Amino acid sequence: MTARRVVAFGGGHGLSASLRALRHCAPELDLDITAVVTVGDDGGSSGRLRAERGGLPPGDLRQALVALAGDHPATRRSAGLFQHRFAAVPVGVPGSGATDPGPAAADGPDRDGPDRDGVARRGTDGASAGTDGLTGHAVGNLVLCGLMELLGDPVAALEHAGAMLGAVGRVLPMSRQPVGIEARVRGADPAAPDEVRTVSGQHQVAVTTGRVESLRLTPSAPPACAEAIEAIRAADWLIFGPGSWYTSVLPHLLVPQLADAIVSTSARRLVTLNLAAEKETLGLSVADHLAALHWYLPELKVDLVLADAKAVGDPEPVERAAESLGARLVLAPVAVVDGTPRHDPAALGAALVPVLGADR
Image (cartoon, rainbow, N blue to C red; front, side):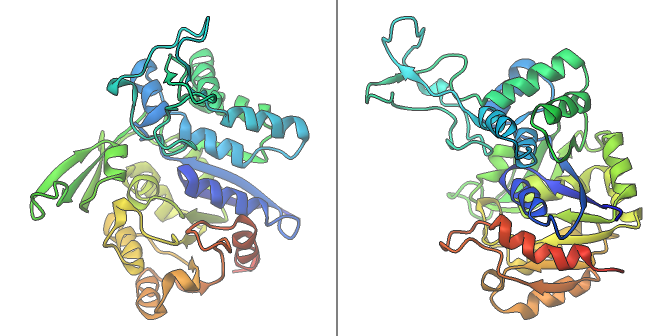
């Protein structure tokens, strides 16, 4: 049986959940999986490496690789190593070289890491914790940064890292050059709720308390990764979401060459909706998420929209928004059972099997 070629777009935890769900489609479906990842991260470990070394921010790429890592014990151990994040060491430990972290040491949140600010505050023995050059970095971020410098090409670096992890799919950047994300935000300053300001940087957009009114990339037309365009053209399915809508999903539609490929491919298109609003999408309804896709890429047509029934609530406005994109709404229980707004990879995979396996 010929494998169905699936291209999943996103970044961070949302894309990771989508990729893990696709893996759960086996053995019912044979899938050839490609992840296309945003390259705008500027917070935490990724932001530090981007600022200090240049090149692509590695965090979201790392997360996608780990989600696709093979099941052999050795590759699972390697995946755990990629996710290991260096903690601060207690101040005064001989040979640690640690210094007490002042305000400047607390770099911004790293959305792809388990510690939201990427910097440990206390030592494991309760002593005051210090910081050094490794504090807050994920090992996989450093490996990817080193591979990109060694091989001179991020795609080659990702292929090599994928081989190290026994990845069951391919990870590609949406562009070989990093991008900036800027948004026009109303009420970014709570003291001026009607004022519209420009908020710069993916991290700042992600944590804004205002309402995002428009989004753009800098540069406005970054060159798309050629291998990503090839994968889109050859795909049977394209999957958008779940994930941070303005900083992980929509940026793909703002890369002109990617947008052209997404519109012109013969692949079917699926949108997986989020389970709850995030800071950057506060005030945005479920239906508004779909309207945003049309706003940024009016030519986009979608075949199916997948959502959790509890998260959707009244399905009628979501059905209308889906129909405006040419899509049918499919409701399925895809959230974890503990009530937190997280997708369950097994449940999401079970919902994807009849969708991706259906004939045209």
